[in-house]
Image (cartoon, rainbow, N blue to C red; front, side, top):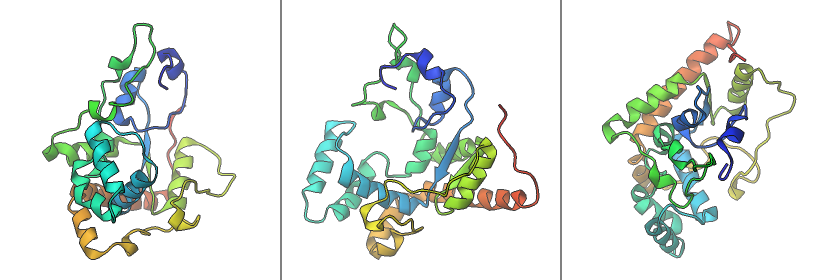
Length: 237
């Protein structure tokens, strides 16, 4: 959307991205939002592999230098875990995604075009204080009309398409799976490969995410039980 006019951005009916609750502020209207949650440990390991494999742009030079030095080490994954607390998106990353707010109106030019500085965009948002991160993430999550759990892909997609009123004419297709998966989705794939010490270190960075995930699973199971006995709700319009 960089370079687009606000008028053009507002003309769409559906958006996909990582703006969290800030995007409706830019649109100037409420925006029903749907998200997926993933087992926090699985997500963290997958994110680390993704960064080591594909990411080439970083929010600041310090992060860039750190990741480049990690990639050059003899054991890059283990080195990343040791420094993960200092890199954005790893520590309680799902709670941060749900509460990360950007002053999006600030990125509008006098001509009304959306022009964020993509090199520094991630660092320009704000999070709640640490003692309120989980509380605010859970409150925002509970305001969502529907959501998915990555470990329950078919049930999640079925529920979301029901809420959106979309047809399910094709089987679920997976894209951009890690090469190690050999084009097969396996829940809890990474957990089975982690050495115990690495698992403990990562778990210490994910306490709020673990609590949010447990809360999401309880809600998912409760709403799944309701869907088996009642008609699922749909979003208006």
